[in-house]
Length: 149
Length: 158
Image (cartoon, rainbow over all chains, first blue to last red; front, top):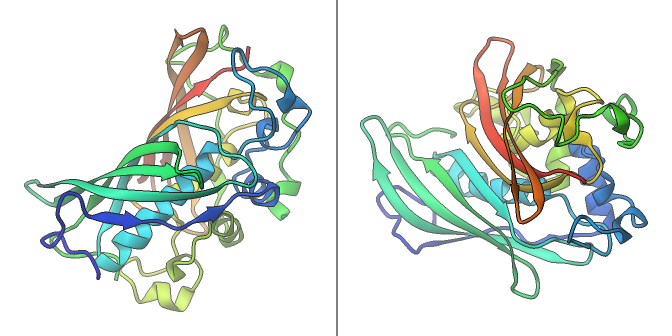
């Protein structure tokens, strides 16, 4: 069912797309984002230590995760005539080739302001083991004259 | 990958030219370069994150929407961060680890937009023996309208 500002309640869930991470998907993201940091490309480099951290192999871009969350938000908001206005994220755990990740949104609060209406969404991304790899918060605007379509 | 051919993909090449945590001065603007966003670049970015909304691909459909034409997904700033900065920008230092981001979206970027960036390091600090820099960024279109603005927290290589 398409969301409307009035029918949304705290606790409602938005299921985002599953995303299978592979060396190829990471390489494609390098080409698409122009972020060729060796963290995402160079296995030998990733055998080394980063201060106290050792990743043990290449990792997915944090921003690939960000793009996936953003896709979930726009795919949910756009059919409702709503607009993705903000996304804040923290990366909790590295994502590696072979992982499958899935973002999920949980409606946290609704707020009306003088000129518009806003929905605050908690975001969590988990891997196939159910471990949190990213957390965040999104803000979606439901204009009184609905947008998008 | 026409855009990738014009872009130095070996981030080690100019590594010695880039500022380290010690050199970065919070408040000092970063050098930036205007970038013309193409439909091809938007489509490649969409493919990399699995975007399927026709508003990014189908011009006839996009014309029927409130936007009146093709747009880029909000998260296109991920590409713009690298396309609007030169090879000696410290965001390309090998080993730069992304710790978190926050972005606000005003209007969509569109194919053909000539996009400019105003960017600086805003803050730097040390936490649990890690060297952090906070960078802030605002992207504008050719009319001077804000597309989006955001901050990122990165851990700098040691």
